[in-house]
Amino acid sequence: QGGNGGKVIVVMPAFNAAQTLRTTYDEVMRQGVVDLVVLVDDGSSDQTVAIARTLPNIRLVVHPRNMGYGANQKTCYREALAAGADIVIMVHADYQYTPKLIPAMAALIGSGLYHCVLGSRILGGHAVENGMPWWKYVANRALTLFSNVMMRAKLSEYHTGYRAFSRELLERLPLDANADDFVFDNQVLAQVLWMGYVVAEGRGWRLAKVLPE
Image (cartoon, rainbow, N blue to C red; front, top):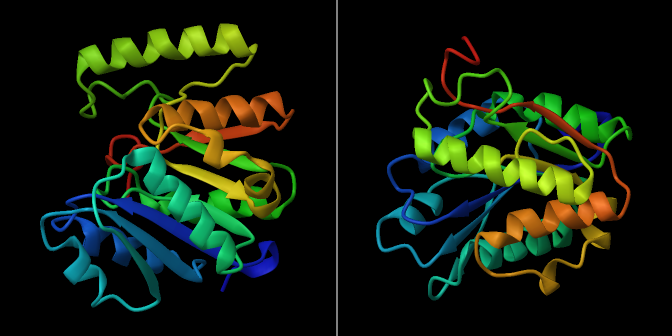
């Protein structure tokens, strides 16, 4: 499938995602460009693992206990690289982001123009009306402004979980040196920018007002 960009692997960090996992997986595969899904379960107490085992074309890794969001991503990327990924796209199993952007994100990475692509919840100006709590939006904007000033960048969001990476970039990033919690996301982007890579952004919110059918 992967196309001229190489092998496309979607990684799914999952924790108690039984209610949304199948819907997310089905829409990921419906895009027609994904060669494999790597799902890393971080100690779920629901049926996430049982459901994952019924899905085809999936590599399942189960953490024996909850190790944290950052630790989950470390396993995701390590497994994807081991499986021969050329392009790695993270899609959360809770269906917060639309998998419909996968072909575009894969194409941007596959073109060689970008090594990191983000699906932003902020671009388009509809984040609050589309479901983001106002306090979370304000905190997001403040932290993003601070991060942009500190890193001399102009990203719309540093906290999105919808991300695509080239193999080259993932192999260069010192992921194991990063935190095992949610700080991991910011640390990765800081490393990407510090290394001189240009980051592309697109609208990644799931709701129809931003991404109509």
